[in-house]
Length: 391
Image 1: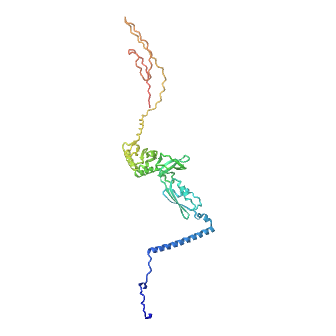
Image 2: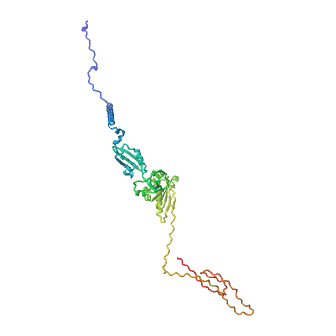
Image 3: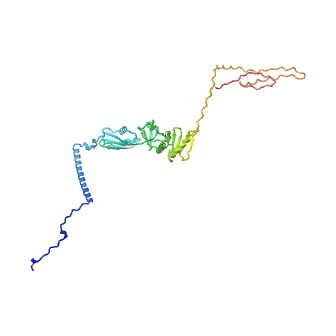
Protein backbone atom coordinates (compact mmCIF):
# COMPACT_ATOMS: atom_id res chain seq x y z
CA UNK A 1 0.00 0.00 0.00
CA UNK A 2 1.38 3.26 -0.97
CA UNK A 3 1.55 6.23 1.26
CA UNK A 4 -0.33 8.41 -1.26
CA UNK A 5 -3.52 6.66 -0.57
CA UNK A 6 -3.26 7.11 3.19
CA UNK A 7 -5.70 9.80 4.64
CA UNK A 8 -4.64 11.75 7.70
CA UNK A 9 -7.48 13.18 9.72
CA UNK A 10 -7.29 16.91 10.44
CA UNK A 11 -6.30 17.95 13.94
CA UNK A 12 -9.08 18.65 16.35
CA UNK A 13 -10.03 22.29 16.79
CA UNK A 14 -10.23 24.05 20.25
CA UNK A 15 -12.74 26.61 21.41
CA UNK A 16 -9.90 29.02 21.82
CA UNK A 17 -9.50 29.13 18.12
CA UNK A 18 -12.95 30.53 17.76
CA UNK A 19 -12.69 34.26 17.02
CA UNK A 20 -14.28 36.31 19.83
CA UNK A 21 -14.87 40.08 20.19
CA UNK A 22 -13.67 41.04 23.74
CA UNK A 23 -14.41 44.55 25.17
CA UNK A 24 -11.50 46.39 26.90
CA UNK A 25 -11.31 46.02 30.67
CA UNK A 26 -13.11 48.91 32.50
CA UNK A 27 -10.99 51.10 34.92
CA UNK A 28 -12.18 51.30 38.51
CA UNK A 29 -12.80 54.56 40.45
CA UNK A 30 -9.65 54.09 42.52
CA UNK A 31 -7.63 53.72 39.38
CA UNK A 32 -9.06 56.88 37.92
CA UNK A 33 -8.19 58.78 41.12
CA UNK A 34 -4.63 57.53 41.02
CA UNK A 35 -4.29 58.57 37.44
CA UNK A 36 -5.66 62.06 38.15
CA UNK A 37 -3.37 62.47 41.17
CA UNK A 38 -0.36 61.47 39.10
CA UNK A 39 -1.31 64.00 36.46
CA UNK A 40 -1.68 66.75 39.09
CA UNK A 41 1.72 65.98 40.55
CA UNK A 42 3.23 66.18 37.13
CA UNK A 43 1.62 69.55 36.47
CA UNK A 44 2.59 70.90 39.93
CA UNK A 45 6.19 69.83 39.59
CA UNK A 46 6.33 71.37 36.14
CA UNK A 47 4.88 74.65 37.44
CA UNK A 48 7.31 74.71 40.39
CA UNK A 49 10.23 74.16 38.11
CA UNK A 50 9.01 76.88 35.79
CA UNK A 51 8.48 79.33 38.68
CA UNK A 52 11.93 78.64 40.04
CA UNK A 53 13.47 79.27 36.67
CA UNK A 54 11.46 82.50 36.28
CA UNK A 55 12.41 83.72 39.78
CA UNK A 56 16.05 83.02 39.10
CA UNK A 57 15.89 84.99 35.90
CA UNK A 58 14.16 87.92 37.67
CA UNK A 59 16.74 87.95 40.45
CA UNK A 60 19.53 87.88 37.95
CA UNK A 61 18.03 90.73 35.93
CA UNK A 62 17.45 92.76 39.11
CA UNK A 63 21.00 92.19 40.22
CA UNK A 64 22.25 93.32 36.82
CA UNK A 65 20.10 96.46 36.52
CA UNK A 66 19.04 97.56 40.09
CA UNK A 67 21.11 95.90 42.81
CA UNK A 68 19.84 98.33 45.51
CA UNK A 69 16.49 96.57 45.50
CA UNK A 70 18.25 93.39 46.55
CA UNK A 71 20.01 95.19 49.40
CA UNK A 72 16.76 96.73 50.81
CA UNK A 73 13.62 95.24 49.26
CA UNK A 74 11.40 97.18 51.68
CA UNK A 75 11.94 100.38 49.75
CA UNK A 76 9.17 99.33 47.47
CA UNK A 77 6.52 99.53 50.31
CA UNK A 78 6.58 102.90 52.14
CA UNK A 79 4.27 103.37 55.15
CA UNK A 80 1.41 105.73 54.42
CA UNK A 81 -1.40 104.85 56.87
CA UNK A 82 -1.63 103.98 60.58
CA UNK A 83 -5.10 102.58 61.22
CA UNK A 84 -6.72 101.93 64.60
CA UNK A 85 -8.82 98.95 63.62
CA UNK A 86 -10.51 98.25 66.96
CA UNK A 87 -10.39 99.22 70.62
CA UNK A 88 -12.64 98.35 73.55
CA UNK A 89 -11.88 101.61 75.34
CA UNK A 90 -11.54 105.34 74.79
CA UNK A 91 -8.11 105.74 73.17
CA UNK A 92 -8.08 107.47 69.79
CA UNK A 93 -6.02 107.29 66.62
CA UNK A 94 -4.35 110.61 67.46
CA UNK A 95 -3.07 109.11 70.71
CA UNK A 96 -1.92 106.04 68.79
CA UNK A 97 0.07 108.03 66.23
CA UNK A 98 1.63 110.19 68.95
CA UNK A 99 2.61 107.17 71.06
CA UNK A 100 4.09 105.13 68.21
CA UNK A 101 6.15 108.12 67.01
CA UNK A 102 7.17 106.48 63.72
CA UNK A 103 9.66 108.64 61.88
CA UNK A 104 8.55 109.94 58.49
CA UNK A 105 9.78 107.99 55.49
CA UNK A 106 9.73 104.60 57.22
CA UNK A 107 8.79 101.61 55.13
CA UNK A 108 6.17 99.06 56.07
CA UNK A 109 8.57 96.11 56.08
CA UNK A 110 11.20 98.09 57.93
CA UNK A 111 9.04 98.58 61.05
CA UNK A 112 10.04 96.80 64.25
CA UNK A 113 6.63 95.62 65.41
CA UNK A 114 7.87 94.33 68.77
CA UNK A 115 9.43 97.68 69.64
CA UNK A 116 6.26 99.52 68.61
CA UNK A 117 4.17 97.17 70.73
CA UNK A 118 6.41 97.84 73.73
CA UNK A 119 5.75 101.58 73.34
CA UNK A 120 2.02 100.97 73.53
CA UNK A 121 2.23 98.61 76.50
CA UNK A 122 4.32 101.16 78.42
CA UNK A 123 1.03 102.93 79.08
CA UNK A 124 -0.85 101.03 81.78
CA UNK A 125 -4.18 101.73 80.11
CA UNK A 126 -3.27 99.28 77.31
CA UNK A 127 -3.51 95.63 78.34
CA UNK A 128 -2.57 94.20 74.93
CA UNK A 129 -1.88 95.41 71.41
CA UNK A 130 -1.80 93.61 68.06
CA UNK A 131 0.09 95.21 65.16
CA UNK A 132 -0.18 93.79 61.63
CA UNK A 133 1.10 94.85 58.24
CA UNK A 134 -1.53 95.32 55.58
CA UNK A 135 0.11 95.60 52.19
CA UNK A 136 0.89 97.67 50.42
CA UNK A 137 1.23 100.59 52.87
CA UNK A 138 -0.91 100.25 56.05
CA UNK A 139 -0.07 99.43 59.67
CA UNK A 140 -3.20 98.15 61.45
CA UNK A 141 -3.43 98.23 65.28
CA UNK A 142 -5.94 96.57 67.62
CA UNK A 143 -6.00 97.65 71.29
CA UNK A 144 -7.29 95.91 74.39
CA UNK A 145 -7.72 98.51 77.17
CA UNK A 146 -8.07 98.23 80.93
CA UNK A 147 -11.15 99.53 82.75
CA UNK A 148 -10.79 101.74 85.85
CA UNK A 149 -12.23 100.32 89.08
CA UNK A 150 -11.15 102.86 91.70
CA UNK A 151 -9.11 106.05 91.80
CA UNK A 152 -6.04 106.83 93.85
CA UNK A 153 -3.86 109.84 94.64
CA UNK A 154 -0.14 109.26 94.00
CA UNK A 155 2.98 111.39 93.77
CA UNK A 156 5.10 111.88 90.70
CA UNK A 157 8.89 111.89 90.76
CA UNK A 158 8.95 115.55 91.80
CA UNK A 159 6.60 114.92 94.74
CA UNK A 160 3.58 116.61 93.20
CA UNK A 161 0.17 114.96 93.72
CA UNK A 162 -1.09 113.03 90.73
CA UNK A 163 -4.55 111.61 90.12
CA UNK A 164 -4.52 108.04 88.84
CA UNK A 165 -6.85 105.06 88.54
CA UNK A 166 -6.48 101.37 89.32
CA UNK A 167 -7.78 98.53 87.13
CA UNK A 168 -9.11 95.15 88.28
CA UNK A 169 -5.70 93.49 87.97
CA UNK A 170 -4.14 96.12 90.25
CA UNK A 171 -2.42 98.20 87.55
CA UNK A 172 -2.00 101.87 88.49
CA UNK A 173 -2.08 104.26 85.52
CA UNK A 174 -3.17 107.72 84.47
CA UNK A 175 -6.51 107.60 82.73
CA UNK A 176 -6.64 109.17 79.27
CA UNK A 177 -9.83 110.39 77.55
CA UNK A 178 -12.13 109.12 80.32
CA UNK A 179 -15.38 110.93 80.99
CA UNK A 180 -14.93 113.19 84.06
CA UNK A 181 -18.33 112.07 85.36
CA UNK A 182 -17.13 108.46 85.30
CA UNK A 183 -13.96 109.27 87.22
CA UNK A 184 -15.79 111.36 89.83
CA UNK A 185 -18.21 108.49 90.48
CA UNK A 186 -15.38 106.13 91.48
CA UNK A 187 -14.47 105.84 95.19
CA UNK A 188 -10.98 106.55 96.48
CA UNK A 189 -8.49 103.85 97.45
CA UNK A 190 -6.75 104.03 100.83
CA UNK A 191 -4.57 101.87 103.06
CA UNK A 192 -2.08 100.71 100.40
CA UNK A 193 1.62 101.32 99.89
CA UNK A 194 2.74 101.88 96.32
CA UNK A 195 6.14 100.72 95.08
CA UNK A 196 7.50 102.77 92.20
CA UNK A 197 9.15 100.80 89.42
CA UNK A 198 10.15 103.60 87.07
CA UNK A 199 8.72 107.00 86.27
CA UNK A 200 4.95 106.78 86.59
CA UNK A 201 4.96 102.98 86.65
CA UNK A 202 4.04 101.30 89.95
CA UNK A 203 3.90 97.70 91.07
CA UNK A 204 0.41 96.15 90.90
CA UNK A 205 -1.77 96.56 94.00
CA UNK A 206 -3.05 93.36 95.60
CA UNK A 207 -6.71 92.99 96.50
CA UNK A 208 -8.25 95.16 93.78
CA UNK A 209 -10.04 92.14 92.31
CA UNK A 210 -12.03 91.85 95.56
CA UNK A 211 -12.73 95.59 95.52
CA UNK A 212 -13.96 95.32 91.93
CA UNK A 213 -16.33 92.48 92.82
CA UNK A 214 -17.69 94.40 95.81
CA UNK A 215 -18.33 97.57 93.80
CA UNK A 216 -19.88 95.62 90.92
CA UNK A 217 -22.23 93.72 93.26
CA UNK A 218 -23.14 96.98 95.00
CA UNK A 219 -24.11 98.63 91.71
CA UNK A 220 -26.08 95.54 90.71
CA UNK A 221 -27.97 94.64 93.90
CA UNK A 222 -28.05 97.90 95.90
CA UNK A 223 -27.73 100.70 93.33
CA UNK A 224 -28.99 103.33 95.79
CA UNK A 225 -26.09 102.57 98.13
CA UNK A 226 -23.31 102.62 95.51
CA UNK A 227 -23.04 106.45 95.20
CA UNK A 228 -22.51 106.70 98.98
CA UNK A 229 -19.27 104.67 98.88
CA UNK A 230 -16.56 107.29 99.25
CA UNK A 231 -13.36 105.51 100.36
CA UNK A 232 -12.33 101.84 100.25
CA UNK A 233 -9.44 100.96 102.55
CA UNK A 234 -7.22 97.88 102.26
CA UNK A 235 -5.46 98.44 105.59
CA UNK A 236 -6.89 95.16 106.97
CA UNK A 237 -6.96 93.18 103.74
CA UNK A 238 -3.58 91.45 104.03
CA UNK A 239 -4.05 90.33 107.66
CA UNK A 240 -7.80 89.79 108.04
CA UNK A 241 -9.19 89.80 104.49
CA UNK A 242 -11.48 92.74 105.32
CA UNK A 243 -12.47 95.66 103.11
CA UNK A 244 -13.36 98.87 104.97
CA UNK A 245 -15.78 101.21 103.21
CA UNK A 246 -16.40 104.77 104.39
CA UNK A 247 -19.52 106.52 103.13
CA UNK A 248 -20.47 110.10 102.51
CA UNK A 249 -22.73 109.94 105.61
CA UNK A 250 -19.77 109.27 107.90
CA UNK A 251 -20.63 105.57 108.25
CA UNK A 252 -18.16 102.68 108.08
CA UNK A 253 -18.96 99.24 106.67
CA UNK A 254 -16.68 96.21 107.03
CA UNK A 255 -16.93 93.47 104.37
CA UNK A 256 -15.25 90.07 104.56
CA UNK A 257 -13.68 88.70 101.39
CA UNK A 258 -14.23 85.10 102.53
CA UNK A 259 -18.02 85.43 102.30
CA UNK A 260 -20.33 86.18 99.41
CA UNK A 261 -20.75 89.92 98.90
CA UNK A 262 -24.37 89.43 97.87
CA UNK A 263 -25.34 88.12 101.32
CA UNK A 264 -23.43 90.87 103.10
CA UNK A 265 -25.09 93.55 100.98
CA UNK A 266 -28.52 92.02 101.67
CA UNK A 267 -27.89 92.19 105.43
CA UNK A 268 -26.57 95.73 105.14
CA UNK A 269 -29.58 96.87 103.13
CA UNK A 270 -31.94 95.46 105.75
CA UNK A 271 -30.01 97.06 108.63
CA UNK A 272 -29.94 100.46 106.95
CA UNK A 273 -33.64 100.31 106.18
CA UNK A 274 -34.51 99.52 109.80
CA UNK A 275 -32.05 101.97 111.32
CA UNK A 276 -32.85 104.95 109.11
CA UNK A 277 -36.63 104.58 109.23
CA UNK A 278 -36.92 104.21 113.00
CA UNK A 279 -38.78 107.09 114.75
CA UNK A 280 -35.85 107.73 117.08
CA UNK A 281 -33.22 106.92 114.46
CA UNK A 282 -29.64 107.66 115.37
CA UNK A 283 -26.86 107.87 112.79
CA UNK A 284 -24.87 104.69 112.33
CA UNK A 285 -21.17 104.69 113.05
CA UNK A 286 -20.08 101.23 111.87
CA UNK A 287 -21.56 97.94 110.67
CA UNK A 288 -19.28 94.88 110.73
CA UNK A 289 -20.49 92.41 108.10
CA UNK A 290 -17.31 90.31 108.13
CA UNK A 291 -18.48 88.06 111.00
CA UNK A 292 -21.20 86.20 109.14
CA UNK A 293 -24.72 86.33 110.57
CA UNK A 294 -23.53 88.05 113.76
CA UNK A 295 -23.44 91.72 112.72
CA UNK A 296 -22.14 94.17 115.35
CA UNK A 297 -23.59 97.65 114.93
CA UNK A 298 -22.41 100.87 116.52
CA UNK A 299 -24.34 104.11 116.55
CA UNK A 300 -22.93 107.59 116.63
CA UNK A 301 -23.14 109.55 119.86
CA UNK A 302 -26.15 111.88 120.00
CA UNK A 303 -25.26 115.47 119.25
CA UNK A 304 -24.87 117.83 122.20
CA UNK A 305 -27.98 119.98 122.82
CA UNK A 306 -27.71 123.47 121.47
CA UNK A 307 -27.50 126.18 124.14
CA UNK A 308 -30.85 127.82 124.86
CA UNK A 309 -31.27 131.28 123.47
CA UNK A 310 -31.47 134.00 126.16
CA UNK A 311 -34.94 135.24 126.98
CA UNK A 312 -35.81 138.58 125.43
CA UNK A 313 -35.31 141.47 127.83
CA UNK A 314 -37.54 144.49 128.11
CA UNK A 315 -35.94 147.62 126.82
CA UNK A 316 -35.36 150.24 129.51
CA UNK A 317 -34.28 153.80 129.22
CA UNK A 318 -30.56 154.14 129.49
CA UNK A 319 -29.61 156.13 132.59
CA UNK A 320 -26.47 158.00 133.22
CA UNK A 321 -24.13 155.92 135.31
CA UNK A 322 -23.95 157.10 138.89
CA UNK A 323 -20.74 158.60 140.06
CA UNK A 324 -18.49 156.28 141.94
CA UNK A 325 -19.01 156.76 145.68
CA UNK A 326 -16.20 158.44 147.47
CA UNK A 327 -14.70 156.46 150.31
CA UNK A 328 -16.04 157.78 153.64
CA UNK A 329 -14.29 157.38 156.94
CA UNK A 330 -15.76 154.65 159.03
CA UNK A 331 -17.98 156.09 161.77
CA UNK A 332 -16.53 155.74 165.23
CA UNK A 333 -18.48 153.94 167.89
CA UNK A 334 -19.97 156.34 170.32
CA UNK A 335 -20.39 155.54 173.98
CA UNK A 336 -23.55 156.74 175.68
CA UNK A 337 -23.34 157.08 179.48
CA UNK A 338 -26.67 156.92 181.23
CA UNK A 339 -26.61 158.68 184.65
CA UNK A 340 -27.46 156.37 187.51
CA UNK A 341 -30.49 157.08 189.75
CA UNK A 342 -29.87 158.33 193.36
CA UNK A 343 -28.51 155.57 195.47
CA UNK A 344 -30.41 154.42 198.49
CA UNK A 345 -28.90 154.03 201.87
CA UNK A 346 -26.91 150.95 202.31
CA UNK A 347 -26.73 150.49 198.65
CA UNK A 348 -23.44 150.96 197.03
CA UNK A 349 -23.28 153.52 194.40
CA UNK A 350 -23.66 152.26 190.80
CA UNK A 351 -20.45 152.29 188.96
CA UNK A 352 -20.53 152.59 185.20
CA UNK A 353 -19.34 149.56 183.25
CA UNK A 354 -15.90 149.64 181.85
CA UNK A 355 -15.53 151.19 178.44
CA UNK A 356 -16.04 148.62 175.64
CA UNK A 357 -13.46 148.12 172.97
CA UNK A 358 -14.61 149.10 169.49
CA UNK A 359 -15.91 146.10 167.48
CA UNK A 360 -14.75 145.43 163.93
CA UNK A 361 -17.01 146.69 161.20
CA UNK A 362 -18.86 144.13 159.10
CA UNK A 363 -18.61 144.34 155.37
CA UNK A 364 -21.19 146.37 153.51
CA UNK A 365 -24.58 144.76 153.32
CA UNK A 366 -24.29 142.78 156.58
CA UNK A 367 -25.65 143.64 160.03
CA UNK A 368 -23.54 143.30 163.10
CA UNK A 369 -24.90 141.09 165.83
CA UNK A 370 -25.53 142.83 169.12
CA UNK A 371 -22.36 143.09 171.22
CA UNK A 372 -23.84 144.71 174.26
CA UNK A 373 -26.47 143.70 176.77
CA UNK A 374 -30.00 144.40 175.71
CA UNK A 375 -30.44 146.90 178.51
CA UNK A 376 -27.78 149.07 177.04
CA UNK A 377 -28.74 151.14 174.00
CA UNK A 378 -26.69 150.88 170.79
CA UNK A 379 -25.86 153.49 168.29
CA UNK A 380 -27.43 152.81 164.87
CA UNK A 381 -25.08 153.36 161.97
CA UNK A 382 -26.74 153.58 158.54
CA UNK A 383 -24.86 151.42 156.06
CA UNK A 384 -26.23 151.03 152.47
CA UNK A 385 -25.77 147.55 150.96
CA UNK A 386 -23.86 147.18 147.66
CA UNK A 387 -26.08 145.84 144.85
CA UNK A 388 -24.58 144.32 141.70
CA UNK A 389 -26.62 143.75 138.48
CA UNK A 390 -25.48 140.88 136.31
CA UNK A 391 -26.59 141.25 132.71
